[in-house]
Image (cartoon, rainbow, N blue to C red; front, side, top):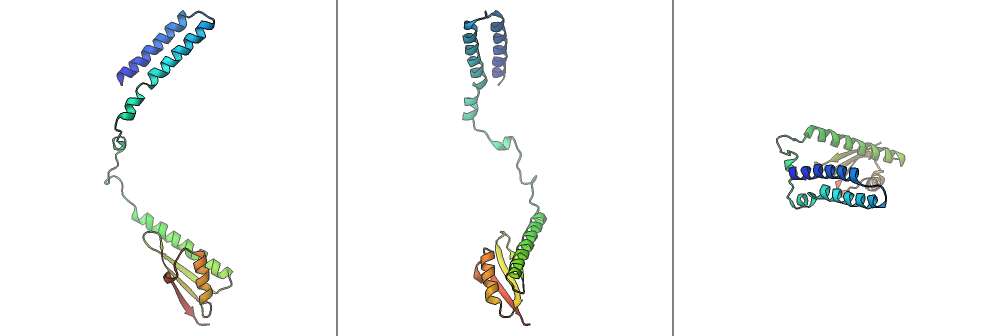
Length: 150
């Protein structure tokens, strides 16, 4: 690495000397072009060596388990918020369809819907089931409907 830096410094000094000694005219343009190519070569010289070397990202960052921990309470809050949003959306959809019903969505640890509990007026069960299947990505066996007599 230090050899590379010395090469760059040497190139800068050589370019300075060439610029001082160059006559003006067409020849100067060609010589400056050749010198520019040499500078690019010297700057890019160590890249193939870096690409063949095995680079371990852990040498740059220290990803050890004792330094980073999962915040279970934060994940729980996020899951509760998602449950609440899904429950409210389903309840709003049921009300928009003219049903007198309330929904409660329960998520599993993997954020999948594990259970949907719907409380509705007697006689509206089939409609509530159909709307729930259209609204949420859930199977029919995970939907529980409680009837309330009017």
